[in-house]
Image 1 (cartoon, rainbow, N blue to C red):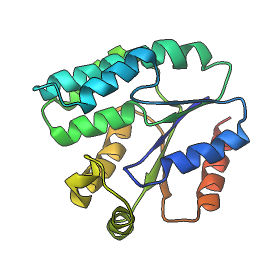
Image 2 (cartoon, rainbow, N blue to C red):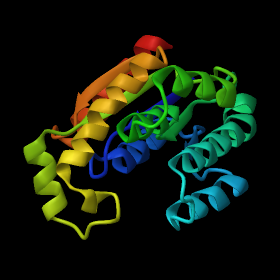
Image 3 (spheres, rainbow, N blue to C red):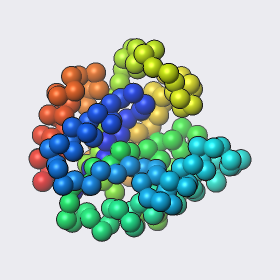
Image 4 (cartoon, rainbow, N blue to C red):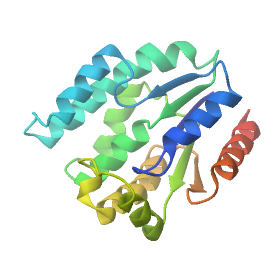
Amino acid sequence: MYIAIEGIDTAGKSTQIQALAQHYTNAIITKEPGATSIGKEIREMVLSARTKSKKAEFLLFLADRAEHIEEVIAPNIDKKMIISDRSAVSGVAYALVQGNISKKELVELNNFATNNLYPQKVFLLRLSKEELNYRLSQKELDGIELRGSAYLLKIQDAIKEAAALLGLELVEVDASLKREEITSIILKNIKSKV
């Protein structure tokens, strides 16, 4: 089974992935972007902001996604639990917010890059504006977080829209719950799918 943990910065994705890894000790833990050797190079290129074109940046993410599917997801999907920190859903969500690629093109290009291989279940760790502002106030902000809570909340809404566009099952989980409660909700939903 292939699942993705989605959510904006500070939502607790890493914490939940660590908890799930304790329940699925043979699981493949992966991420998008940057899980493969080529993906790491692509991630560095994008983070260094060398691309002038948002379309070029988007196509680099698609290249990473295609390599990730080929190298990590496809060979293991029938044999192991795969838990991914982000997925195509995030890629589509960020592109939706940027707004320079049509929804139809977003879906077609991602279908091409993934060979229509998507997570069987997507978990969105959802934050309220108040909780997000509190969490941001407690840490040193990175480049994305410096764009502010309004931008991050737009991304969060776009994650929901992206999952719908790609036809994926999305389970929203209140990210302000206790860690153990969130893990329990995710595990219950995984078991209902198996």
